[in-house]
Amino acid sequence: MPVLLVHGIRASRTMWRHQEHDLRAAGHPVLAIDLPGHGKRLGEDFTVPVALAAIDAGVTSLGGRVLLVGLSLGGYYAIAYAATHPDRVAGLVAAGCSAVPRGVLLHGYRLLARGIHHLPDRGLWLHETMARRLLPAAGARDVLAGGAALDVMDAGLRATSTLSPLRSLAEYPGPVWLVNGALDHFRLNEPRFLAACQHGRVVVVAGATHLSSLAQPERFSRILLDITGQVVSYRP
Image 1 (cartoon, helix red, strand yellow):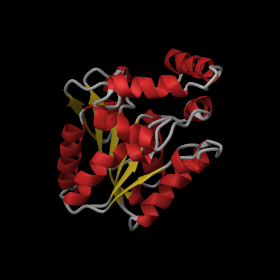
Image 2: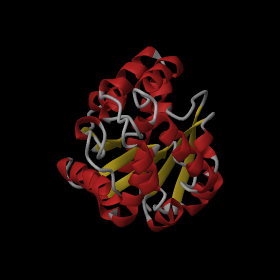
Image 3: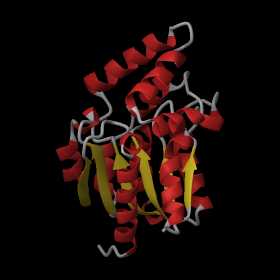
């Protein structure tokens, strides 16, 4: 089963190195992409159409039908893509994105993003320091390897506020796994997200915070490997 991996905000495709290795070792074609304004696409404007086009290009490169995995920012765009391209998504893993991206939560993050952007280094020291303090050493190395998307956070959040993940989940007819760290604050609306799915399941990563694939990489890889098997045998 081909697997496409979509990263979180301010990160890049390098955050998936551990999962890429484990999936390939198990025989799965796998690709991690950069969204606009991130990784090798630093400097590009972040918009909804361009983000969805990046996912579409990745799906095409893997043969046209994939297990689509997105975390945080990438999860919201994976959900949106699955709803509009169900024939190209055999299964959907939406990780760390079980909160409606608007209201107080989004407003607070946008204020934080603007404040960080006004720091002398635009938040580079804070970004690197938080990664090294909050993640295992290997996870910090992976998330920092692709550079920091220092200028895209507010634009990315603004664009994401126009998405409707609950409606998109309701429109996608395939299997959905909502994978969340047990301590993730983005579980805020988890019951609503699960209820919106036609065929949904919640998977909780014990002891993990928001970036569960980096905080608990071995566990996250095992979850994905288990899901790939379920997708292959899935019958609606």
